[in-house]
Each structure stands twice: as structure tokens, then as C-alpha cells.
Image 1 (spheres, rainbow, N blue to C red):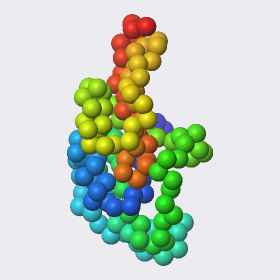
Image 2: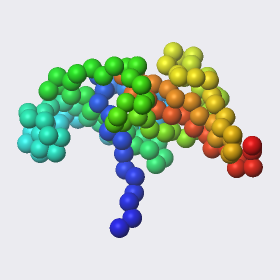
Image 3: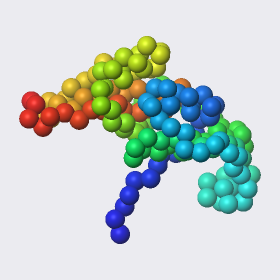
Image 4: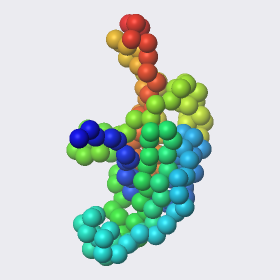
Length: 149
């Protein structure tokens, strides 16, 4: 059976702020209203007793993010400067048409960006790692011309 990518789930501290960030900075759309979650099924699937909070799906093209704002249990704040080498979720990639324009937009908005846009040898792919308001890492990328060296 072939696999098909569906979404990335992210725990956020303020769901409205995160929706606004991804909408304004990356052009994503809110795919549903913010709604509460909790109860036995959520507790079982998330393996969190008495879990509760609010959630929403946002997306653009083939990328969807499932945003969770937990109210129970109280989340432990992740270090917003965690190194991407830590085990577990490292980042997700977002392909853009004009990486330099997107980079400048993010920079002007005060978004934490790891480095200037890098162009990789052997294909010319351009990329930069950035962080959302909670420190979650996403990679901006723009495919290059395979003929570029």
C-alpha cells in the first residue's frame, strides 16, 4: 500500500497567534475553526490521561499543520533554542517560489532565522532554517537547477 503524507502536528502555546504567524508569514490558510478536544478517545490516542485543549488544521498545497494548544496536562515549555540535532522532531520543510523574498519578509517581522539563505553545491537548492513563535523549526527551501554547480 503506498503511503501519502498527511500532516505535521505541533503543540503551540497560543493557537490564534500560531495561526496568524503561519497565515501571515507563509500564506497558509485556516482549514477549520478552532475547536476543543478532549475525552476518552483523545486521551487514549495521545496517551495522556484527561487530556484537553483546542486544535485547528492549517495548510497550503500539500502541507498541513495540526496545531494543538493543550490545557491539560499543562505542557512543559520546550527550549525555543533547542539544537536541531536533539533526538525527535527536527524540522519540517516548506517549499517557496521566492526564498529571498520570503526570507526578507520573515526577517522584517523579527522571526528567528538561523543563517542567511544558503545555496547548496550540486543542484543549487536554496535553504534557510527558521523558528515559529514557539521555537519550532521549519526549513524554507527553493529547489535549484540540477545543472547549477
